[in-house]
Amino acid sequence: MEQLGTLLLSGLSTGSVYALVALGFNVVFKSTGAINFAQGEWVMMGGMVAAASVAAQVPLLLAVVVAIVVVVGIGLLSERAIVRRLARPTPLAVTLLLIAIAICSKSLVMLVLGKNPASLPGFSGSTPIEWLGLRIHPQTLWIVGITLAVMVAMHAFFERTLLGRAMRAAAAQPEAAALCGIEPRLAMALAFGLAAGVGALAGVIVTPLTLTSFDHGTVLGFKGFSAAMLGGLGSLPGALLGGVLLGTLEALAGGLVSSHFKDAVAFVALLLTLFWRPSGLLGRGEVERV
Image (cartoon, rainbow, N blue to C red; front, top):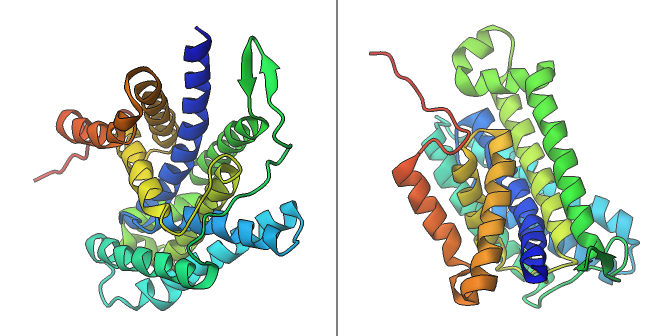
């Protein structure tokens, strides 16, 4: 029973990170209709920049802010200097371009920050908390709490604010939104900035538990994409559900079956979702009138 509780806590922590990565996918998808395959690299960059800042004797809180600002800047620069220059920024064209941006981002981190793994100290130290016979790392509580806060804030932004609704309108009908005074390119820039910021935050909060390096972004990106598809691409609550569910399944498979099956769970979940329910658990299927 104690082992099961430990596995569930581990799954909740990992799944919360996957949920944040999935949230980044959904933010860009809701605003542009494209799949942001650079999201995993932005998560990795957040952890790497924060670790490099702490290694340079920057206080931890300031290092977190620096990491988020740097990655948001890179996200905005990617949109402004590369994506915006597309003559016809269709979702497919933007998606393909984001794959190239992901590859360039990984190479940039390798050249600037090196290949060695990096780590961060825990936000509240590393002394385990005893609760009901379980030993909980303090960083786990930070990860879960920050994930819930970001999810609630992002949902409120897109559903309750005028700017969030304008971004959704620009993604659904760019021409109609432009006629109403909404600039689609500005909405795209805001989406990239939000996705980069969320990704950087995910990288910062998970690095105290797991080391990060320049090649960790690809795996995180794939698992975040799997979580987004599982919960429903474009659904913010679906990102949370998909991330936690995927993290829990991974932890149970690794702890009860074999650690060799842990990474395969994301592949299996993605395949089953595509075959059984392509719109995801909380996603809505599109209806096309002919």
